[in-house]
Amino acid sequence: MNIAIVGYGKMGHAIEQIAQERNHKIVARIDAEMMLSEKTNLLKKADVAIEFSTPETAVANISACLKAGVRVVSGTTGWLEQLDKIKALCKQQNSAFFYASNFSIGVNIFFELNKQMAKMSQHIDNLTVGVKETHHIHKKDAPSGTAITIAETIAKNSDFDGWTMDSENKKNKIPIQAIRKDDIFGIHEVNFNSAVDKITLRHESLSRRGFAHGAVLAAEFLNGQTGYFGMKDLLGL
Image (cartoon, rainbow, N blue to C red; front, side, top):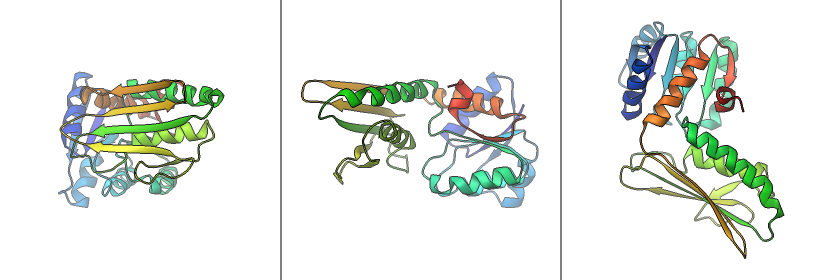
């Protein structure tokens, strides 16, 4: 399969390594400095583009791929207020788009455990819930897309009314604490607290390879597809 990498930073390099290990060909490496016409010419060589860029450039990058007739896998977070716009463009182009806030298989298992815990926690009196995420100092969005997914899943499966930043302390909302330090790949923790006990779910990513591997699996899944997909489709959940 021919793959274009959009956003050739640390994640882009990890994706390239995994893709080549799985016998795929990298036909384009696209960064922010390239002109649109240059990007379009390179993209046309690809079957699928894997996009890990920035919240500021993600929508333009994904749109350019779809308009070039290339299916897109995206793991960039912090732009989802425009997701409906991308879904509409994907449908208009009769193409395919795969989005996940986190491509780690382990994190997606964590998501399912969190969902079940949220459902079962309704039997606990006076429950409080808190989410904490820690990432490297270069991560631009806060809270992380993964932390938002965790909190929104709890809210959908319990009596909580959405989420808030930890410092805002809004009633009946799940507080998310976002920490940026060192070169941490990603730690996500959920605490379910009552007067008599505390249950903690925690996931720590030890390298970028887990994210990169999941993104390449998503690209393989997307090849030949049309429509909008996520990790539940890939994992059959």
